[in-house]
Amino acid sequence: MDALVAQSAMAIPVLSPSAAAHAKEALGFQRLRLRAALKAGRLTDQDAAAFAEHVAAVNQSLAVMSRAGASPAQLLAIVGVTVGALSQALRTRD
Figure 1 (cartoon, rainbow, N blue to C red):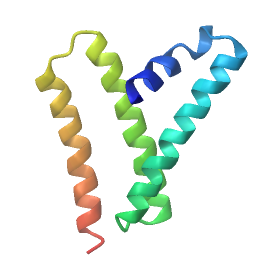
Figure 2 (figure 1 turned 45 degrees about the horizontal axis):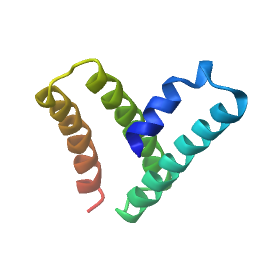
Figure 3 (figure 1 turned 90 degrees about the horizontal axis):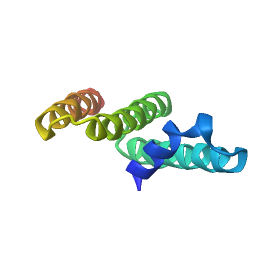
Figure 4 (figure 1 turned 60 degrees about the horizontal axis):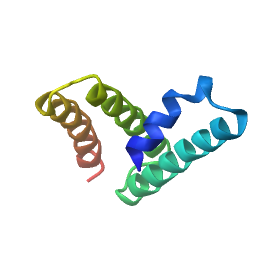
């Protein structure tokens, strides 16, 4: 589902107004789900919002890079950086 959201978001400039609105709504729901999960992980509201935005952006980028031929190792390295940053943020909350 997230890959479809990423592909839809990339096409927003050429979508009909109703399809573009639906794609934007799907992105908003993705961010809300991420933010709620991150808040459950003891992050502040501000940190959860920032990480949710970051993770959504990384997810979009992964979809684009995958379609452009990035290797699984390259994609995993990107995910590793994001997971590492989130892990560090959660450890500072303990």
